[in-house]
Length: 466
Image (cartoon, rainbow, N blue to C red):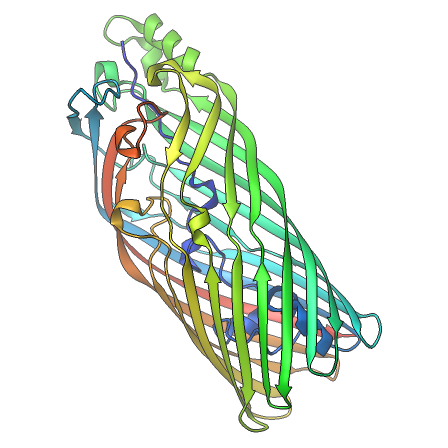
């Protein structure tokens, strides 16, 4: 008898990070920058310049500390969802595929938590008149998404979570009064998990005996950052910032859970079904997936119109096409998938850009007001390549906030951002042949859903100069 294949989607690196920024970026690593929709990288206002342009450390005398906390309220809701089982002739291209019936379950719901807290820490130190050192510890990617366990889309992916942290020591060198450069190394730890349902009951009725797997994996990856800053004159500054790609081989464990009712008997052959399922989907097995987080290049500028008003701009290009294909591999070949041990994903992402514009107004000696707007292009090419776990789409940022000097040595920044995300639709196809493979680990289902998303971010940051 034939078991339906299990699809374990490889979007461990995706999830709902798109709520904040396109692709799977978190979106902001500084509250002072958040208040201008991340347009103010050329400003080098505090130690968080390590992330946006580390050459800006040469603008900070002495020792500087910045600690930021972002409170994120994401909202990703799906509706009008539907799914279909398919009988595809054992993945034989010469055998016509036929529908196996509609998937029963919930057709709408919310995918995200109500509130997520994300911290960032930065420290810079002037070593002499030309050389500066810094350390950044920040979150570039962070997300969590979960469908109802009864969702009609459960076979594509039911839950994902991602936690990453970068440790980024950097050196900056002041070439002269106009030009500064910087270089650093990035050590990035990624931890991911997912839950995926499987249609084990296909021989006796689709959906009659669902099981699921909990998959956890982590890895350290390494990259680098480069930066340049140019003071054209006393009122105008431009800069470039480059962050390299980072390769990850997320290795971990897949733990399988099987519905207890299938062991009580189905079609008069409980032992056969139970033993066959357990032989190809063991209680626990190794699993791994290779992911490359993308490189990015930013061009930014600032212009002081007068002692009170400053304008900012930033254009960031990201090579999201690094996530064109991916493969999730299991230690055990699945006999029900013709000995396949691999799940394939083909998101075909495109390279993207983000354009940010901002301004600040020095209301008083102690208080500065800030605002910004940004357009963030999604890497998803169309509805057929949009992932159910990452219903990403183009977005617009609206931000405002301010900074207040508590004393000569300390200050505080506050920021609020509302992120408008264009409505999206995902057409999900987990069948092997449509992915360009004759065998794969997949439940052989299709699905579709509509998505409405937005996010709010409240940030607070404390800065201290020693």
